[in-house]
Amino acid sequence: MSKSLIESNLPDLDLVARGKVRELYKVGEDALLFIATDRISAFDVIMKTPIEGKGKILTQLSTFWFDLLKDIVPNHFITSKIDEMPENVIKYRDQIENRSLLVKRLTVLPIEAIVRGYLSGSAWNEYKQSGTVHGIQMPENMRESQKLPHPIFTPSTKAEYGEHDINIHPDETKKIIGEELAQKVAEVSVKLYETAAEFAIKRGIIIADTKFEFGVDAAGQLYLIDEVLTPDSSRFWPASTYKVGKPQQSYDKQYLRDYLDSISFDKATPIDLPPVVSDDTLRKYIEAFVKLTGKRPDLL
Ligand code: ATP
Ligand code: MG
Image (cartoon, rainbow, N blue to C red):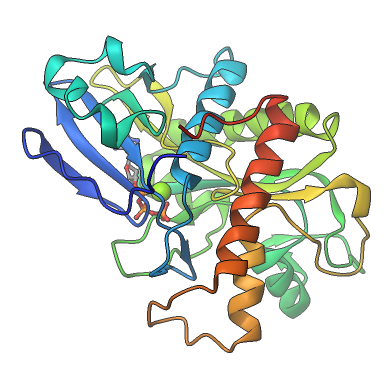
């Protein structure tokens, strides 16, 4: 396996953004190089220890879903093949191979399009308090991890760096991106979730919830962007051990979050992870990839 990538260094390209996990470089006027590093964040804090190969798994899983879901809505994917990228990108093959996509550069809509099929996480916390999820009234007497009567669109704001996203009622998105686009994003998000969840359950994985991001081009065409349906953006549960009334084992970052809770992590200061935690986290990511795609990720 090649070395892990904590931070890219591509001096001949203009860095557009360095997120918690991904780095974006400008490629020509209309494209971006979208690189997934091996950084891992939890509670919006980037850990000091990388998860070696995680960026490759996320990139390859996103590519898999882009292809599977492309008939529902166009997406930003152009290519993942380094040889199809411009010369000034190809020269950085060592750093970017298997973990990067060339994507269409779009205007990002300032909302996180979350869809939930099960009652978990912040939605479960809100439900226990008020019987609602993102302000939407839910049936009485629901239990933790219970399947919702139908998947619901439960957006949040898209926080600036260092801030936390805030859960909002779907109607709030109309004020942020306009009524027509809000309606379209809600519809498309639920359709994407339903299609992916139906696919995943046949492979033994419950997609409890997920977060999509969308962008628009100059003509106003809506595109699915960012990463899609990865363990970083979704709660994946093994169907074989699913049991209502408690938190679930998971293939996603929940494993890391549980560890951090167990050591009373202050949710502010980056820390080193013990090897057993980083190894187990990687193993979970690989397991989810193999189950969903039926292939092993290319970690070279
Ligand atoms: P997190 O996802 O953990 O909240 P983040 O949002 O800070 O982290 P990353 O996910 O690491 O950032 O970086 C990806 C960034 O790139 C996001 O801000 C996302 O909105 C943006 N982005 C994704 N696809 C495109 C695209 N096609 N055009 C322009 N920007 C994009
Ligand atoms: Mg992101």
